[in-house]
Length: 391
Image (cartoon, rainbow, N blue to C red; front, side):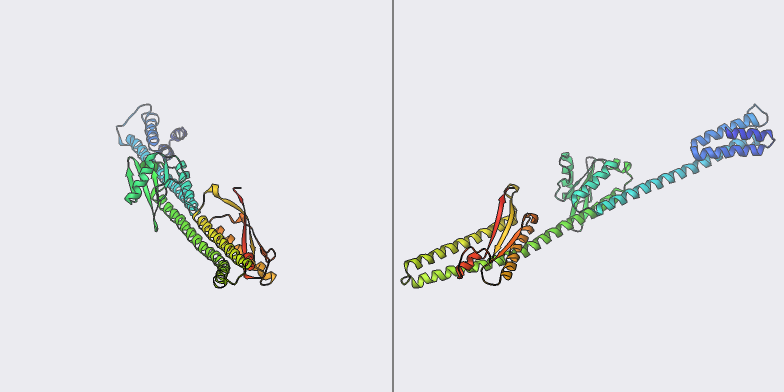
């Protein structure tokens, strides 16, 4: 309408060239902003109006001369050129916007996966991406078990297991596509897409790049788990050695007492009075009971290290450590503290919550047996564990 009004004014002033140029500008504007079809429609309309209303003879169509055909050719050529250029610009703009969206999404995914410490976090990242961009997709570990999802169609698990068995980076079956996450330490897991072609069309995300990012994240999580297991074994061995060293030291005393009493009975049985004979037998019996307790403790440590059921777990209130009377008070307090802490650290290394354990060193303040002989000293060197069941 504006172009037609401008053309009418220019034509009234006798400026036919200016009138034609005004229509050219109008057609160019429409073709640039509305596209090729609208530009061609505007060019045909401008040619008809110019030919019928403005060019001689007025109110009559004419196409008998080159001058009458020139506006039609010029307007349509302008419309085609502007429409094509506008279309290309729009396509480039759309491609640039899609690329920017793709890059932003991949950066977001990359940052999230870099912060993942467990495979569950990797699965959560994939699930969030799938909610926004992809068709249904699921993440399975290297054993074919789903991560973070309990109820899945059986076909997903079957395809994941087949992918792991085949060892192929990309596996297709029945409209499903699975990708094997390859890492330096073997398969890191499997991603299964319900329908990859639709996912690729819908999502501004590079599936291959996503698989590579998830492979790196899975490898990092697996390496962290491996390192944690190695560190746990190392700490367990260190604390086990400390505990066993302490126990072996304590076991020497009952063994020595048993050996001494048995030797006395064997060598002087006829010369010993009845009371001394009974005392030596009682010493052997008591020291055998002590050895039996030490053996039971060692078996309990093995059970703890192997793992116990939740309903059999015990809350540890305190580990009391006692020493014999030899040495100064300060020395015995420190010695008892070191031994109690060694027991606590070992229990913590095999899964017992360290916040549930407290240690107390009494040194030589609370003897279990009075006396200054080897038998009394052996009884006074002890660790007492106070527990409350199933709390």
